[in-house]
Structures are given as structure tokens and as C-alpha cells.
Picture (cartoon, rainbow, N blue to C red):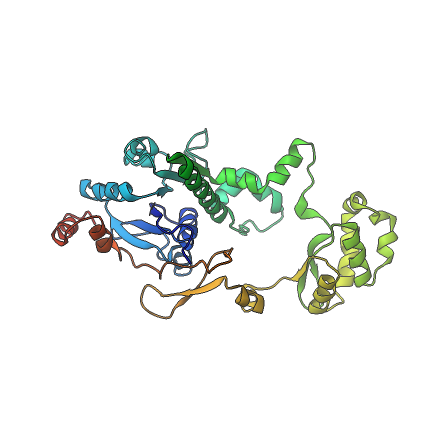
Length: 382
């Protein structure tokens, strides 16, 4: 199989999570991703042995000192052959380095330039420091799913870094298609705040039509206690609610005027929750899950990560793939593509790169001689 992005070269100036998540998916589709890392330091997450491999296996690592003229010249040679540049510097930093869209577009008109930041390249919040949970707090997301009574040390699920990276991945794919038709590059501005609002688009729309209902607080869509485990159950539709009541031996709840329709169930949420929990708590979780699923309801035991990773379904889907580790030790099991093509498997281009592992190889591809590479090393440019 020829992978969809075979022949596409990506210069990856990103670090941490959102940017590497984006370029991770580009390399799964066959792009040659050159991860440019700081000399002697590397990606901020190289000391996170569980995270770094998951986002950077299959890429090639080169080290450059972009504060030197020689190091910057190497990058310019890379850009002359590149299709995509992606960066996640703080807004304004790329311009100081001479690596912003305005500085590069005339020289590389076919280059697709993608920036990922917390709040975007323009706007009043542009320079506000940003990480995952700061943007969640800013966006209204935290307030939508964390109750005021919750332990404030519990940050919730980190989704914005990954989703922002996937937004950037999608935008780059669209820009590549556009360039195929026009021959022109594109500037892409991806903001985590915009991504957060996209994730909450239903709540945003509801707000503007005057509804403040919280989807996450519905009494018929929640985690319920079973005899031995916790079970998630969704019984939003009338037929689902009726099936749930029959399965837990509470048919009287179907005709109870307090729970006659969706609005009534919302008004009497506490009473309904108490009625449902009293019944679900008497059933073994596996039996209850089996009966609910058989009846067509979305339901699942709240499984642990090890449980689902060992599940036959996950094993059969092929989403887990093994790649060589950077130190030559045991292969690592990582998550591959979330989708597959009909004519072959999308996978990693190689193992986890050691810091600067591909520097000499890449420079040789750019036409540098062995003597010139040694001179660059002596001048601390690489």
C-alpha cells in the first residue's frame, strides 16, 4: 500500500502535546516528519517515557541551534523541500526568529504554515499563557462539567491538547488538498480556545437560544452503582427509558407522572436518580450490562484502561501497534491510527527517535558534506 501522504515532507518545530499530536497523525499517513529539537535539550516531554513515544515514534529527529546563522540556514534548506511547517511557539516568538508566515511565504509560496497556540495569533487574549486546563477554565468547559463541590485538585480529562492537534491535522489535510488545486500554500491559525468552543458547540448553540440545560446532568444518562461495579447507562429516548425500567424490574416508573416525559424527568431528577440507583445496585454489573446492551441501550461497565486494552475487540481492531524503542530495548506498544483504509494498515514510519538521531542523515540529504557537517557540529549549530 502507498500511504496517502507518501512524499509529503513536514518540518515539525513543535513540542509538548498539541503539535506533536498533529504531526503524529501526519506520519501515520505516510508523511516524512522531521522533528527539529533544541540542541542538547530536545522536546519538553522527552523525560515523559509514556507520553513522548506515543506522540513521536515514526518521526526523524534532528537537533538545530536556531539562534546561530548556520543552524538557521539548515532550517531554510529544509523548508526549500518541505510541504508543511508546523510550530507552537508563543505568539510573536516565530516572528522574532524570522520564522513567521510573513517572513517565509514569499520565499516558499507552496509551504503550508500551521501555528498552534492557546488563544490564536490575533485577539486580546493572544499573549495570555496557556496550557490545557487554563484554556478549559477560560473557555467555560470546566464550569460545564466540574461541580463547585468537587475536589479542586481534580483537573478532569485533558482533551484540548489532543483535539487541538487533531484540528491542526485536519486543517493541514484540507490545505494540502487546496494546494493541489491552486498551487499556493496556506497559513493556518489553530487556537485551543476555538477548539474548546467547537467541542462545546451544542452548549454554545443552546445558550444562544436561551437554554441552559447541561447535557452532563441528565438523570437518565449517568453512571449508576451496580452490585459490584459502576455502570454507565444512557436512557435518553422514551423507548430506552421504558426498556431500562423493565430490565431493572421497575415498570411502575414508566407510568409515574413524575417521570412521564423528558421535562418531567428533569424536574424530578433527584427522585428519579434515587429510584434507579436503588434498583441497579441490586444487580451484578456484568448481567445488567448484558441485558441493557441486548435491549439496544448504550451501556458499559466503567472499565479500567488495562481492562479495555486486554479486550478481544481492541486486539482485533489493530489500533495497538508495536514499534522499536529508542534504546533498543523491548518494543513499545503504542496507539496507531484511529481509522483504517480498506487496502492496508496505516502505521508508524519507524521507532522512537533518539535526540538528534537523524541529524547527519538529514544534512547529507540536503547536500552537506561530512566535513561541513563536522564544522557545523564544532560551531554548535547542530
